[in-house]
Amino acid sequence: MNAMLDKQREKKVDELFRAFETVTDGAYLYVCDVKYDYSRWSADAISRFDLPGEYMFHAGQLWERLLHPDDRESYSESIAAIFSGTDQGHDMQYRVKDRQGRYVVCTCRGTILTDDEGAPDYFVGTIHNNGLESFVDPLTDLQNQFGLFEHLKVLYAKQARANIMMIGLGHFTTINEMWGYEFGNLVIHKVVQILKNAFRNEGILFRADGIRFVLLTRTLSIEELQRRYELLREAICHTMEIDGYHPNLQVCGCALEIKSFDVNPQAMFSCLVYTYNQSKVQENGEFQIFKDEVDEKRGNLMVLLNTVRMSIENGFEGFQLYYQPIVAAGSHQLTGAEALLRWSSPEYGMVPPNRFIPIIENDPAFVLLGQWILRRAMEDTRPLLRQYPDFALNVNLSYSQLKQDDFVEMVRRNMEITGFPPQNLCLEITERCRLMNLERLSSIIRELHGLGVRFAIDDFGTGYSSVDILRCLSFEVVKIDKVFVDDIAKDPEDARLLGALRALAEICGARVCAEGVETAEQCRIAEDRGIDKIQGYYFSKPIPIAAFLAQYLLEEPACP
Image 1 (cartoon, helix red, strand yellow):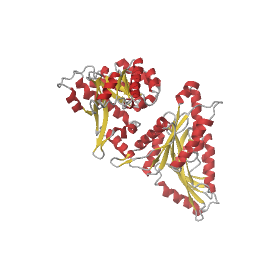
Image 2: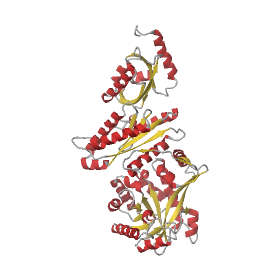
Image 3: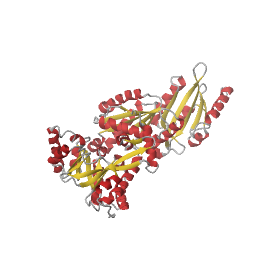
């Protein structure tokens, strides 16, 4: 011990250490006497890192020498601000070299205890070792999504309010295609550096999947995050330069306030992703703030989503499929049906699909739900095949399903289990699916075409590059969105447009189905314009399978 150290203060360090040790949740604890720069650290930290012992003078300097060179400056600035009384603590992430010479990612949170005059007296905090390599993105050295959820678990356990922000890059595929992946990696590195500088010592940065980044902060308000976002957008889109080039990037972003701890962190994150997609797809990169809308009948949206997720985990409790018939133009004979998801619970009653599906589609749980939909739809409609051998079962796909490496195998396996013929299955590509890599989407369609499965493009004419998708990929059916049908009986131009869309699809070798037909006049005009198939309330609303079979089966056939 240093002879100059006051014995009472030495004792105080130990007392504080014992007091805080019981609530560290497995993290390394440190207590520092600011006046003498004398500290006590957890024995676990000493054994893991190259530190001289549990009791140290100038521990901050010793610790700084173990930090990754790129992280030392921000750490040094933070410690200097704390000891000078400028800051009351810190919440930061950095990389530290352990005794094996490997860098591990640590998160350090500390706070100042002041004396009677308000001056810094003791600095107390924890260091959480995130060190597992699987938690670190190798390209950026940021923690990945696994690391993010580890932090969220701790946050939720302590019910500590925070704000979470997601920032991503659009048009990035073009960068890789034009300049190559090496240049693309330089862009990512530059963006990460901009983000680090923008949020130094104000939160923890993570790399989510793809080119999306997440900031978890307990110090910045939603309003401040929005202000910073506009500055970042300007820096990345207009002033960022790499090797003399200015990459053409779109920046998208959103934020969400973490304040409800009775929901699963994944449900919260799915709401964040949903809000991010609003920024990207609908708002051209404008910053979006998640609004946890309160519905008089159905409560908070995030709580609702959490209940839906629990229903999936509880054996798809409350889920059922309804079916809307698709008929041939002219004869109005049944040619197929679209399977449509419905969900209800004792607490919420029947919930409209548009309230929960757009968000749950962003959730990993939807992969399981999507498989359940596919198998149940095959089982439900298989009795129709003897009477209607050309019957087409239309099932919507989600972006999260198509991202799965085993998607094609999943479809094949479920057809085999149910005995459902591939040629009677038609998978619908919805708007969000069109955002994925065309090469990946083309590969999936090609493989399933090889098995005999057919494909339809849904909501044609709306959303992202429908015409380009139709030109590049092979579809058997084009489903024209309801918005092009609504006014065809009142507006001749809309009727001509419907005919033009039909002609465009025909050029690409696809048959056309008009969605949302609700009247006899709409049906007649659609048929006059050469539409092949009709779907809509004019023939039937979506109905449960029992009602569907009762309406369309002349007699109960033996299963084929």
